[in-house]
Length: 155
Image: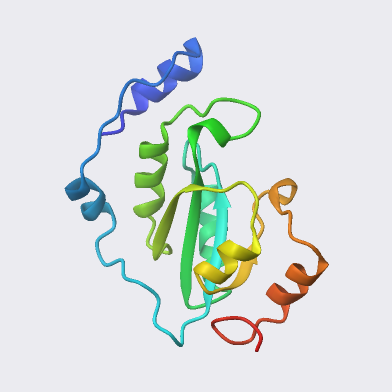
């Protein structure tokens, strides 16, 4: 599993994370109860690094969940996680997010920038912005998300 002692050691020594291997069975155990969104459900998307998963992350996810019926959470890849290398591996961060009861599904290796393609592909009706610097959608995209009253967005 994920050892707190190991995480603290990584932070203190800036050591590279040890190899963390997961299986589909392990991911399934963390994702117990996950299902695709129903056609009538309003899909909400939020993405971040979710490194060293903590109460602030849980609060963000719980808030995002109140914005719709189905919460899709993007977890950025290790290589795209911002100005520093994450302490936890992407696998560890995905499992941490999957373990949160507010989350319906996780997009692994989520893109840093929210695109119209992502919104359309996952029928996203609302985006909760965890890190505004990564939100690179034009004015039309912002209006589309704010005004999206139906699960698939405006007509």
